[in-house]
Amino acid sequence: MSTTRTVPALAAGLLGIATVIGPAPAGSARDTWTTTTDAVPDSTVVEFGEVIDIAVDVDSQGGDAPGAGTTTLYAREGASTTWRRVATSTASADFLDVRPRIRTAYKVVYGGHAPESPQQDTYERSESDPFTVEVSRTITRPKGGFTLKGRVRPRFARRTIIVKVSSEQDTGYRRFTTIRTDRRGRYRIALPRRTGTWYWSLVVRADANYLGTGYKWETWVS
Image 1 (tube, rainbow, N blue to C red):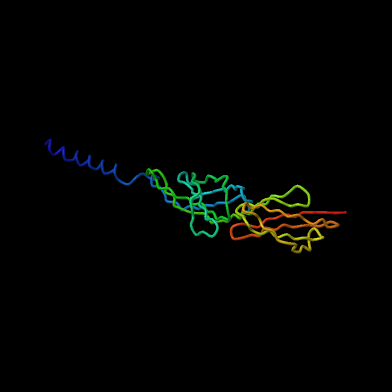
Image 2 (tube, rainbow, N blue to C red):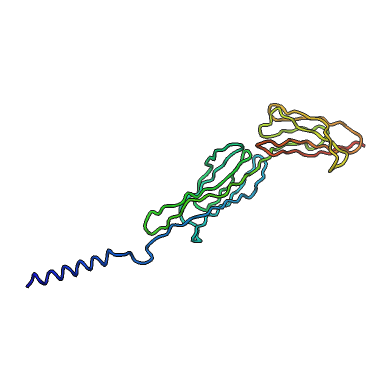
């Protein structure tokens, strides 16, 4: 008689175990989300030596920013076809004080995030649209007088500067001469002491890596 009682009790125990290891409770399954990454610089034109800040925003298909993962800033300088890593930060953190040395394209890549536990969502990788920051050379100038001298940076050794002149401040400029910098990028020109008021323009041409630069200068002789 005791044997016939044990069998039903054992069967009841097995049914209880089957209920515990059955389908997981509702809401325990996690999701996989696609993401979008936006990167916006505070300026796309700077002088050599200046820095930019890049605002970063990473969002998911679900409408929330990923709570984990990293973003990486990449740069492609000049005519290069290779992206190099500049800096890495947490998701949606901005990149500050980025210093382009020459004309440079940038993009930001969110690396995605794989869950470390069953309670976390999965976020897929995404990257921003590239943007380009133009860099202009700098030129120093005197504070007054008929002798113009200064320095052009960077890397402007033994290159030409165009000098133009006009009797009108905004129009009518024609080429006066060209001068050449020395091995350190320094220039010097003594302007003629012409009677009347004259306007001079020094022009540093643009090239593949840098925007042009220059300035205007006024002289007068009574």
